[in-house]
Length: 209
Image (cartoon, rainbow, N blue to C red; front, side, top):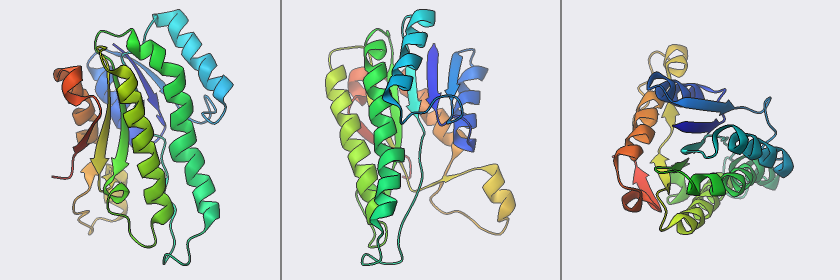
C-alpha cells in the first residue's frame, strides 16, 4: 500500500510511519520542512508527484496538530484561533482536496484524522481548540460523503490526548490517565483496513473507551 503521513516528524508520525513500514508498505512521510501544507499549490504538487509515481494513494493519515487555550473563556485570544485554524483546518483542507481523487482510485483507501473529546465536550478555556477540532471533524465528514460508493473511507479517531515514551521519561511519576499511546493509535489506524469501507466511512471512533 501507499501511505501518506502528514506531520510525520513528531512522535505520533514516527509511530504511524514505523507501523506501516514494518508491514512492508510504502510510506511517504511529510513534515513542515518537506512541504508547506498551508500552500495549496505545494500540496497539489505533492499529490501530482504521488500520482505520477504510484497512480493512487491507499492511506492519508493527517497528523498535523497543535493546542492553544486560555485560563478562562473571557481570556480566550482570537490570535490563538488564527494559529489553530491554519494548523487544524487549513492544512486538512489542502491535503484532503488534493488527495481525494487518488483515494477514489484505491481498492482499500483510508483517510484518517485524530480528533479530541474536546470537540464534543469543550471547556471554557479551550474554546478555540474545541471549535477548530469540531470544524476539522465536519470537514472530514464531508470528505466521507464524497467517498460514499467507493472502496475508500474517511474516519475520525477520537482521543483524550496522546502520550509517547519521551513524555513518560520526562515525567516518570505521571500516570497520563485516559491518554492514548501513539503506538496504540498506529495499530488502530492499521485496523481500519480490516473493516469494510462502508462500515467505517463517516464514523467517529472513540479510542478512550
